[in-house]
Image (cartoon, rainbow, N blue to C red; front, side):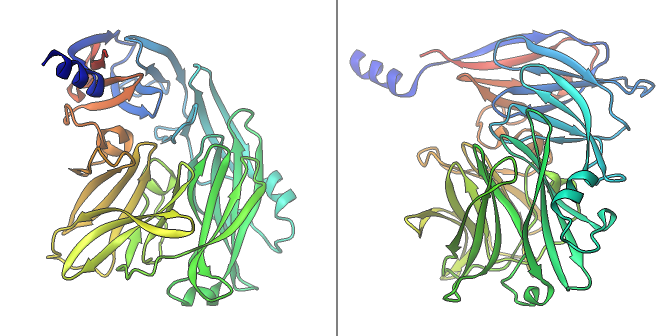
Length: 416
């Protein structure tokens, strides 16, 4: 019996519960907490009277104390928090859409260095896009802003009235030196979009220093799929290949995006699609909704040796309030795919882990998940903010926000 017990301890580990630590109060109350995936949590405080513009940020990692405290002064009352997997940086954007060709931001690095700066688009556009006749910066449509491990990427769309086509443009700013680079991701003719399958270029994911974009279309054999292009953080094209779509009969969906990217803040018109292509940790995944023998399910496939294989299936409830297209969004994490799905006027967050033994988790969606994505797979203390770092599962009760006292974090520590 002792040997059997010891085996279970080795296999599953032992967790110690009920431990806690405190973070001292700041000049002003903490009013918000957001996750910095892989680094910890950012406690944010400001003057509740708004007489002072200063925003204080405190990084809390896994050391039972604050890692660092810093502050910045946003231009206005609102800012946009952008973060991504595996990045040593986060951004507080003053404006997503350029103002007079500029966007302003504060960049925070995990080492505690915080910089407030701006980026000017007119110079980089003049160099890279000079061959696009009559290009006017004020006519650009911003369709997304994404955080990758090495660069912050703005994706613009420009409609050229004379040639009746769209130019899809990417502006990459490397985190370490804030230098901007740009490229033309592709062109899409207006008449091509009359084809229900054809679409615009979209960001689909990144792995290390490779950033991927894709556009729906046909190959030389007229098979449906995506042209996928990979870029460096300096906007250099390094790969281009065609990924064939699955022949499964997916129902139309409306890809609304999911996660702390620009699409979360921008109201960009989208075109119905049969499924969503995602690139995570070097792999391609395909997600959509199928109805087979009267059973409706969310199905994810994984590309292996250029063939789509079943990866995950999740049964869905019968539709009582039909819509032409089901809104859906994919939030790629290192641990798995977070999927936001509307069912009968309610949004659900479904988490499909890459560790297939962990099992799918489902929760009713709320906006707190955007700022705390680890909440989708942490099973303990569901009502609290939570993150995992260095083997610890750390939790924070939201009721402590806006108090004038020290705040407490509780943690579950794996001790074996």
